[in-house]
Length: 293
Image (tube, rainbow, N blue to C red; front, side, top):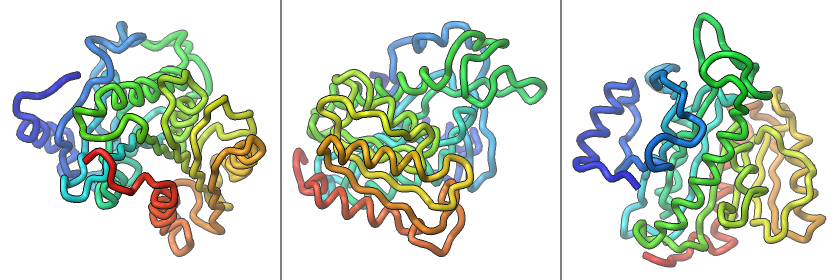
């Protein structure tokens, strides 16, 4: 695990210099892998910032990391949650699907880890991949499936937080993950992945790739949210996912809000308050009851 000598100072500079000045800096940046991430050995380009100052995005992520946002010690309940932003596997929405979510989780007493997973190489002149739907055919990622690589990063994130739970002051059996759109697909990769990389609870929000696949043995409880007017991924996959969990007798909660569209960007409906529903669900299942801290 990478620990910076002067984490707050260094990350303040990084966030401001990278165009993320409006986002609160993390307490620490933690590399998912020692050295170069497996599969990224030939990725010789630099990460870049896109979006706007109030809604910054990360692109061309080569080095996957966790941005650690701990809850105040007086509020901390001993639960951790990994946050996987969306962005079509091409970009990461670092504000409203990342750091903003971490801030809200901190208010609940939950330690948050924003996951910067690896993304499709974006070249303004010629993009070498087709929207994350399969392996790239040209460019530095030729032959690689970035959806699978992003999913592997999600699995590694769960492993890492659980392995170092004592260091963070959380319980190893209270490691959750929430993800949005493409980040929701990352969540599902952890849920259906190896047991040692499986979260203790999961929240796919307007998740890409949600379907009716039977849950694996020992699958975690699930909180699912989507808008009925989602114009990109639709709502049926989320309903099917919920149905699969209930058919298997597993705890699950589903919210299909009348309006909100993809990203819950259309305001005025219940989707505006989905985090309130999430907090109620976390409380119902005991994850907001004080544990390790």
